[in-house]
Length: 143
Image (cartoon, rainbow, N blue to C red):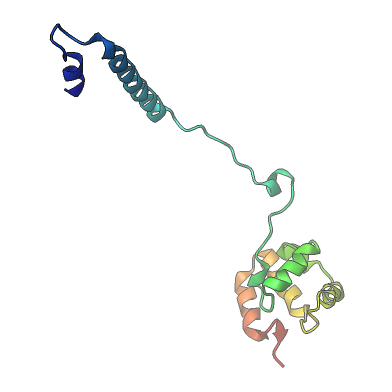
């Protein structure tokens, strides 16, 4: 209404000086409607996502903190040494893991129970894994 009033101001007829402004605004409105319709009608592109580990053939890391006695610090030390899965830990030598822990200043840790737990977890024997964990305290067998 305001636009029509502006166009009709003056005594001699419509004010044609503002017609171009009205046409530009109308054009932008039409463009916005078309772009909005087009964006809403597009189907999202299906993107095939492959994790870096899968595409490179590397196994994805397991949560080693599930093992009784392994916390965030130990998990980081093991990951830096390339031990990122239950299978990696299951095939590691206790003496090698102990050396890693000693070098990291974690001398009070004992990896023997970790390796037994990792063997069960790598096989997917979660019942045996939980049973073994009930026998352990801090990753060590109760005496």
